Amino acid sequence: MSYASEMLAAVASADRFGTGELAAVIEGCATAAQACTTCADACLAEDDLAGLRLCNALCHTCADVSETTMRTLSRPAHSDHLVLHRMLQACVRSCFACAEECGRHAQHHRHCELCARACRMCLQACTDLLESEAFEELRKLAGG
Amino acid sequence: MSYASEMLAAVASADRFGTGELAAVIEGCATAAQACTTCADACLAEDDLAGLRLCNALCHTCADVSETTMRTLSRPAHSDHLVLHRMLQACVRSCFACAEECGRHAQHHRHCELCARACRMCLQACTDLLESEAFEELRKLAGG
Amino acid sequence: MSYASEMLAAVASADRFGTGELAAVIEGCATAAQACTTCADACLAEDDLAGLRLCNALCHTCADVSETTMRTLSRPAHSDHLVLHRMLQACVRSCFACAEECGRHAQHHRHCELCARACRMCLQACTDLLESEAFEELRKLAGG
Amino acid sequence: MSYASEMLAAVASADRFGTGELAAVIEGCATAAQACTTCADACLAEDDLAGLRLCNALCHTCADVSETTMRTLSRPAHSDHLVLHRMLQACVRSCFACAEECGRHAQHHRHCELCARACRMCLQACTDLLESEAFEELRKLAGG
Image (cartoon, rainbow over all chains, first blue to last red; front, side):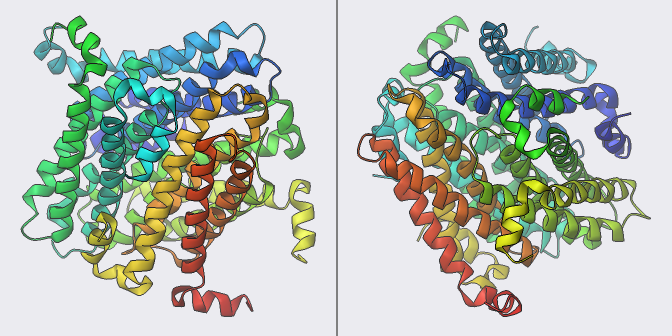
C-alpha cells in the first residue's frame, strides 16, 4: 500500500471517493508533476532545444496543474465537489497536451518518453475518477 | 500600470488575449491567493474556529487554484488554449465557493470580509476573460 | 526503481549528486507534501481541533516548502548550488517542526502519526544529501 | 495601502514583524514570482534561446521559491521562526542568482530587464526583513 493510500485510509472522509481510486490520482499527479519538472529542465540541456520550446512550456504548466489537482484531492474532509471536478478536467487536458508533445520527442529523448508515460498514467487515473460513482450526479446534471 | 501589465506588454504573444484583461486576471489571482492564505491562517487563531473549518479548507484550495491559474496565464507564448479555459473555470468555481463561505463570516471577521472581496474580484476578472473574444471559438463549439 | 529515479537516470546532469540520494530526497519531499496536506485537512475534522491549530499551520507550510524543495532538486541541469543548499536547510527545519508537533498528537490521530513519520523520512533524506560530497565545498567554506 | 497590507492589518499576529515590512516582502515575492514565470516563457520564444537556458531555469526556481516564501510569510499566526528565516535566505539567494543572469540579457530583452528589477526589489525586501528586529535574536545566536 502506498503512503498516500495509508494517509487516506486514516481519514474517514475519503471514503466517498473510494480510497483506492483517490490514491491512484494523487500518486499519478505527484509522479507526473515530478516527471514534467525534470523533463522541462532536461529539455534545456538538449542540442535540439529549439524544437522543444512547446514541450518545455507544456511540461511546466502540467507540473503546476497536476500538483494543484493532487492537493485539492488530498483534502477530502472539506472540499467543493465542483472544484474537484473542474480541476480533474483541467488535469486531464493538461496531461493530454503534454503527453502528445513529449510523445513527439520520445524516440530522441528518454526523458520525454518517460514524461509522456507519466502524463498518460495520470490522465487515465483522473479519467477513471471522473467516470466513477463519485461524480455520477454531476454527469447526470450535465446530461452526460 | 501594474508590474504584471508591464511584463505582459514586453511579450508580444500576450496580445491575443488583450494585455489588460490578462493582467487583470493575473493580479486578481495573485491577490486572492495571498488573501486566502492569510485568511486561513487567521481562522486558526479565532475563538470560533469550530465554525470556520470549511472556510479554512476552501481558502487553502482557492489559494492553490488561483496560483496555478495565475501561472498558466503568465505563459502566453506557448500554452494550450483548453488548459487555460479549464483552469479559468476551476478558478471561477473555487473563488465562488470561497467567497460564499467567507462571506458568511464577514461580519465577525475582517479577514473573511477582505478575503471574500478578493475572491469576488478574481472571479469577475476570470469571468470577463472567459467571455472575451479570446475564447469565442470555444464558446461556439460548446454551443454557448 | 522509482519513477523519479528513472527520470533522473535519464538526465546526465543529475550525476553530480548521486542519482540515488537525489531521488530519495525528491520522493521524501513528495510523500511529505501529500501527507501534510491530508493531515491538515483531517485535523479540521477532529473534535479536538482547538488543540491542533499549530499542527494544521505547520503542515501547510511543510507541504509548500517540501514541494518547492522537490521542484528545485528536480532541475539538476541548471541550478544554483546555494539555492539548493538553502532550500534543503529550510526543508530540514520545516519537516522537523512539523514532525515534532504532529508527533505530539500521534497517539490520538493516525493521520498525525503517519504525517510525522513522513516528515522524519524527508528530514533524514535532506540531511543525508546535505552531508554528501555534493555539498562538501560549501561545508568547508562554512568551516563546518 | 495594498491588499496584502490590509489583510495583514486585519490579523493581530502580524504585528511582531511590522506589518509594513512583512507586506513589502509578500508583495515583492508575488511580483517576482509572476515576472519570473512570464520571463521564462518569453525566453522560450526568443531567437537566442540557446543563450537563455540558465536564465529560463533560474526563473522557474525563483518563481517557486518566491511563492513559497510569500505563503510562509502570509501565515503569521502560527509559524516557525527558523523556517521563515531559512526561506527568506533561500529567497535572497534565488532572487540574486536570477537577477544576475537576467541582468546579462537586460539590454536585449525587455522581459529580462523587468524580471531582474523585480528580483532585486524582492531581494531587498527580504534582506530588510532579515535585518529587522524580528530576527535580532537569531542574528545574536549566530554571532552575526
